[in-house]
Image (cartoon, rainbow, N blue to C red; front, side, top):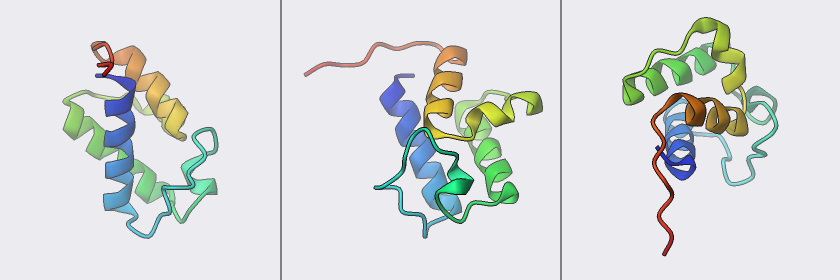
Length: 88
């Protein structure tokens, strides 16, 4: 998966869980819960939906690494098969 595909998947999943979230102004380095109404149940739902979409088990001990968009990019980018970005 490319970083762009990871970002798209994460943002689409968040918009399903918390449709009122303003993702246009999302700071990729700030925890989701600090930017919009995203509680611990929403966060667990995010992890579960990512696991389902990616057919990939995320250990609970790794959940904190997925608390930000950049965290999701880094963690999933390191764990999933790499696909180069298409330019042009």
